[in-house]
Amino acid sequence: MKRAWINIGVGVGCVGLLLALTVSWVLHARDAARLSHCKGNLKQWGTALWNYHDIHQCFPPYSGGPASVGERLSGRVLLLPYLNANDIWFDVRHPKGFEPQFSPDPMKLVESRSVELSVMLCPSSFIPPQVEQQRHASYAFCGGDQIDFGEKGGVDDFPNREETRGIFGWRRCVRDRDITDGTANTIAMAERNLGGSSLRNEVRGRVAEVSATSPAECIALASGDTYSDSVSILSERMGERWASGHPFYSVFLTAVPPNGPSCAASAPPSGASVGGWLTASSQHGSSSDKRGCHVLMCDGTVRFINESINHETKWTEGLKSTKPLNHIFPEPNIHGYDRDTSSCYGIWGGLGAKNDSVGGAF
Image (cartoon, rainbow, N blue to C red; front, side, top):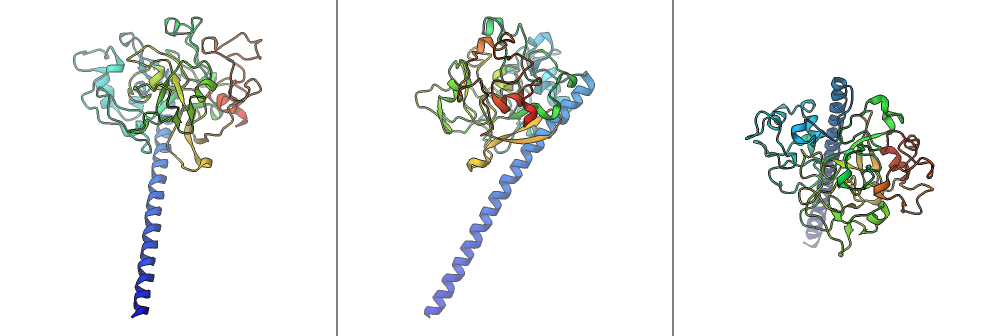
């Protein structure tokens, strides 16, 4: 009898072990599928970018479109015909109440079909509730390592100079021949996590309401994956208004490394902020050596960038940059840094810039 109970116990233990292994395998397979889906989406965006380039002889701006919308449509909207989304393109072109022109306010565009679009979402990211029937977007355009805010350093002067060090600008299109670093060494787009459902101070997907003058000031607001309790967090999320070309919704910068904090003094539509340090992020990987995010290179390939990628140079002491937001392109004799030379933010910064010698070292 005793032996029978031992046999039963061994059998139950074996079954339990098999179940545990099966569950672990299923979860691993599910994560791998999500990872593959995210990569596949980015490759679709890469194909769309080059199809757009073939037709228009340049890549789209991160914000553009007709004057009737103030040229404020996200480049994601302009790429819809190349993403097999002509029905949504028609909705944008002919919104209810505004026919036959574009909606006058992309940030408040209401579509007849507001279901989420698979190609715009990474399945690893939590999808928060929609705001004003706006689709979400998990993928953003690379504005380089900084955005030029003009001489006044704010909204009043933006986008008079219309410059970024990346391939995407406000109302400005870049051709493939303008990418002197080579398309294989320059980032076009990246994942951007949409944030969890309940953790308000979660770093990924959330933006601190702080006007940080350097990436170091922004990085100092967080510890690990959460902002400090004293930091005010914007209610708006970077990926919640897919159609808006405002930098807050459509752009990320290669200054703060992947999965780091993001900062902006305010956010549309509650405030008119064009700037800050907006970061690429994802929920991929739990161990420290596998955390990072996918980026789409300009040649159409997709790479996984670890969050520990170098983002410092000899001009940045530790994580500190002395370059303020309102003077992004100083005279070339200051550290030899201008829009056509190396980034202040190491390899990560160099990969985001189209005319930079650092990115080639990746």
